Image 1 (cartoon, rainbow, N blue to C red):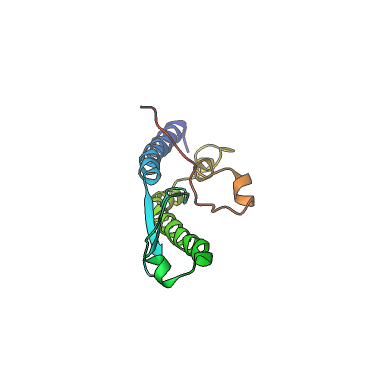
Image 2 (image 1 turned 45 degrees about the horizontal axis):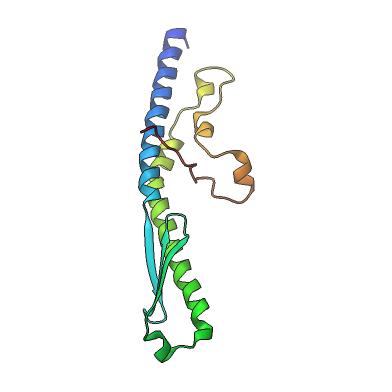
Length: 146
């Protein structure tokens, strides 16, 4: 491969990466705004969670006490919180899926420049996170300047 072709391929690959990172910032803002609500105990316990799955609201209808014991309330709150967190996680993964698919299509810089890293590895969270059991397709938080 001659220098001009390599320069063109590298410029194109870097432009794709820049576009990908800009889109990632947009998706990350949308993900951060996610929330979910779930109910348990026949709808008498309702819990809302934010994008990270953290509970920010819990409501217990007075009718809960007609059918359920106070001792069971913690379990119902946990059940609703887990369902809401699973919903947020699912919707978050759906938002990231197109970016993950595109990342898999990025060229290897080593094909353009000997010894250069694979662009896909640059767009992944650090390897330490992968070894801690986190999802390898989870993207880091990216913020763009205002």
